[in-house]
Length: 227
Image 1: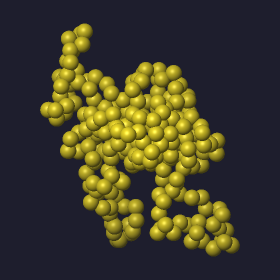
Image 2: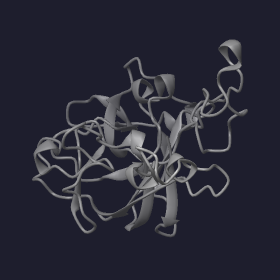
Image 3: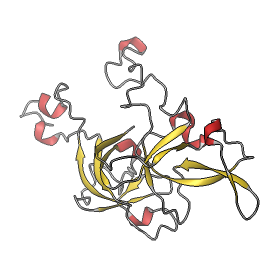
Image 4: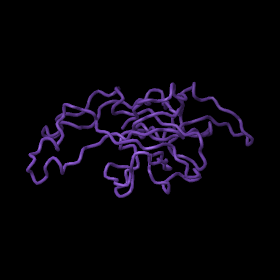
């Protein structure tokens, strides 16, 4: 859904052409761990003219640099992608109404992906404090990064999966990473809204599922990024 800059490094590393397959259908939500790879100039991946520079390597194969969330074995330049739709301020709102007016909140987001016009991805590489929405994390139902993970504690190491998702599982780290952590988990956070009354406060205390039994709804995972 999005990457939030809490106490980031002073500047992002830069903006680089995004791999088309990752940008297609808003494939980058924001907050994924990405890297730079070489892509053949004669390939099908498209880029704007200012991002179509290349170089000739020993095999005389002209290549250019692209950003991808598919982390190859041994990748060492790891960054956070800062492109998406929801929470990025480029949307035209979200659907309210829908079929028979049933959608009152949380409807489909209307608006372009921030990488639509340029095809580029902003990449943050500096150590700092960031937050990523949970839909851009490894949320395996039994062991992944999620609020119901009772074994995940503040200060635990975080790794990156081959798909660029944060995970507390070293075994899920992308191949060839040497099981090196990319950051440290700090906390889960709600959306911070004081306007929407959460279910845990709306229910009677003597309800079978009273306020003490209703878990908070978290949206963000706060972490220290230090690859």
